[in-house]
Amino acid sequence: MLFAYKAKSKTGEVYEGVMDSIDRFTLAHELRSRGSTPISIKEKNKHSFDPSLLLQKIIGRVGVSEQIIFCKNLSGMLRAGLSLARALGVLEKQTKNAALNKILISLSADINIGETLSSALAKFPKVFSKLFVSMVRAGEESGNLANALTDIGVSLDKSHALTKKVRGAMIYPGIILSAMVIIGVLLFAFVVPTLASTFKELEVELPASTRFLIALGNFFSNHLILTFLLIFFGGISLVALFRAKFMARYVDFFVLHLPVVGKLAKELNTARTARTISSLLVAGVSIGRALEITEDVVQNIYYKAVLREAKLAIEKGSPFSQAFEAHSNLYPVMMSEMTEVGEETGKLSDMLSQIANFYEEEIENKTKNLSTIIEPVLMIVIGAGVGFFAISMISPLYSILDEIK
Image (cartoon, rainbow, N blue to C red):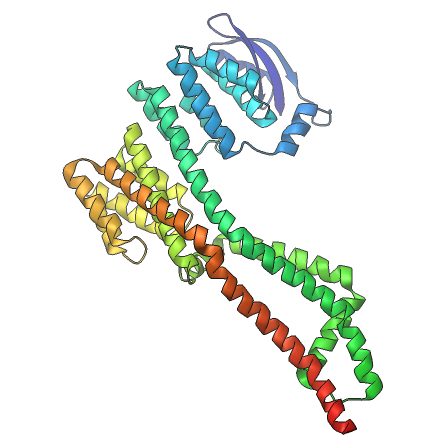
């Protein structure tokens, strides 16, 4: 059950919050164990209309850009001398995102009863990643929380910018292919049946390709709405299939071996690996823990396996650069070489940062030129489709002309 409660902290400050519990007595016991005195506990009616909850559902989530602003603003206020509780209170008043506002209320309540910021953030795993929480915890332990928040903001900013560039490069071909499908369906639905009726009147013997296109055109013409629904739900089903866990190995393998896109995917995973480990090491996280968190950050199953192997090498006392060297088909030679130098010189975080910078620049340059590379491929695909359609529909007309002669 969900309960809305009001309680008084050890310092005498009254705060409110929402918590899931078995019953009121269990919740009251939980609050007292934290050192707070319950003032009121009310069950939230699941069927009651709550505008803030409705708005939260509409807004949906806390975006990366809002997390970046959260880090930078909180860091700035801590540097200015504000207490953590006061800084969170200011952010709570400033934010316009309903979801983030509720999170900030919860964070303030937890801080007021003596919890650390990292433990409070860990209660929202769908918003704050393990990377985020671990860097905050390292900052708390070292007494440099403001610096840690700044580093998190920079790391999130770079990662977000990199992801946006790659996604932006994929939008153009996606729009072109979608337009091709829509135009193709409309062409079949309205043009092909007209030509089919002409062929029928003239009693022309049609080749197999023409009969296939006419059958397709008749189906689209008679079931146009159904066709678009099938395409829509087919696309959703295909995306769901590609995201299924049992398909991860096959999809990741396919992506890594695609022309152009495969090399871009390898550089993206290399940059993400180097940037994440570097940020965590700078924050004071141990190398073993850094590799474990980075494994969660990278999405490709093959890169996850390499990072697990690197973590095992660390536990056995071996340099983890050997794992990168053994998988040069995934990580470039530069990654293993510079990582090895970093391990030997004690400047591992600096070396990894340089690797991340290098491959982030490479990705930026390639995504700028990606549309130029993809355009000829799309033209060939469109040309092949139009050519097949033209030959299939025009060849019967030539046979008619031959008979007339």
